[in-house]
Image (cartoon, rainbow over all chains, first blue to last red; front, side):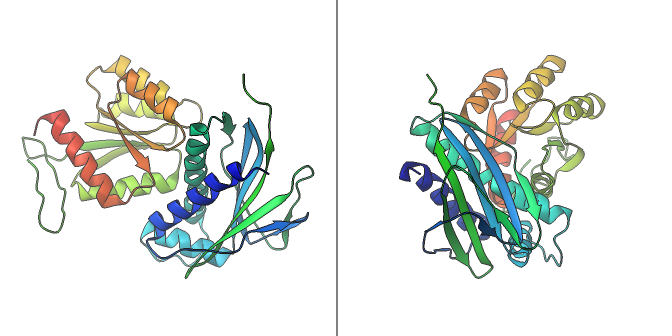
Length: 157
Length: 142
């Protein structure tokens, strides 16, 4: 996986979380994971196709997802209800959009899929053809993982 | 008439003292809720919401709001297509696009089709309200 692909997603995630949560965010240690990769309680998945292919997955515990959604809505949330799910999905969408912007500036053309939110216990993700890179972002609300599985796609002409 | 106090209130009313009427168009429940907060800060009224472009055009015909806020990427009809449809219905329609970065081509197309202003997601309600207040002052010469 090219560093060029990773940095925009890492930076976009850090910037967006810092903006929407208005609290200190710390970057944890980056790790390369073997398949399958454990996924925390709530995950937002966005696919990429074009010059870059694969998927980005943002995952966190359900407790962290509720806290992040509550902070973004300036309210107290006690459960992962419809609005909380919509909020976390939109957060994934916004981060991906910002990363896309940066990658477009670097000359990469690709499309992204609408976000899919999944939720459950003991989840795993498996990507057959690429390694997975995980970058944790840590705040007092918990850990927000950026989970990247990206490779060169068909270069546009 | 606009009021901006030391606390940053951004209330804005029409010349006759009535509130501005907004139609909010976005497929994200979170963004619609956030924009409703923004409209409240402006002392405006949300007269309708739409989750996609088709619904947006139908709502516009019924409600004739003063301002439409519109997402760029939506199912069934994109924000660009919504702008074109609404401009066809009413050349004087006032549209503010709401978009994540990463869709610059579509934003350019929307602006080219007649949407003159846009807000970038994510936004803090007060910052968005300040921007929309500035836009309304220009559009309505207040």
